[in-house]
Length: 191
Image (tube, rainbow, N blue to C red; front, side):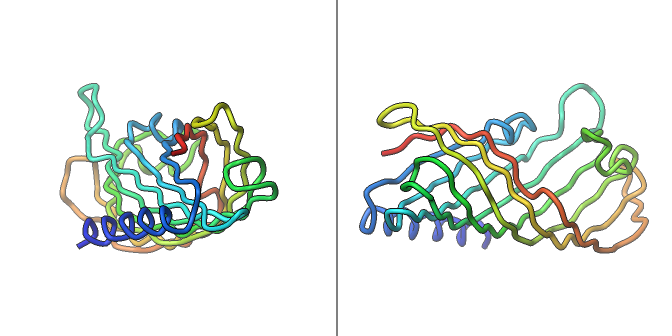
């Protein structure tokens, strides 16, 4: 069901982009690759100073190294952007929605985020949104580079388990998260 919705959304975005715009771009976020998460986005001009983007990331693997660490998840993030100069050039602001599922355990995240994740497994889903700001540099006729950050809210519904490989459920709960929802250093190919 989710694959069908994502495929339909990508098809609609791609076909409307070729009819309504001059530029369509494919992009990937290097910071997301650092978590071993393959990711791809498509962005299309819908006006001189407006673009729509659909971004997807999927990490289906357990981590290597013999431990039982896992950061399996998927994410879909549609976004509207307003450009101060022109589409795909310079400063922009935007609004994004996001949603996905996760199954994570035995992971030590940087800056002490979610310290209980080191000794417990969490499985669940999240949905939310926020605002984005960023800058895109034109490198050549077809290549750009982008830096962006997003802040916002996520509703997170989860089950907490005793350990990474054990099946004993400790609780089911939810949390409201406010803070960074996006960080990207993206390489972009413009058609």
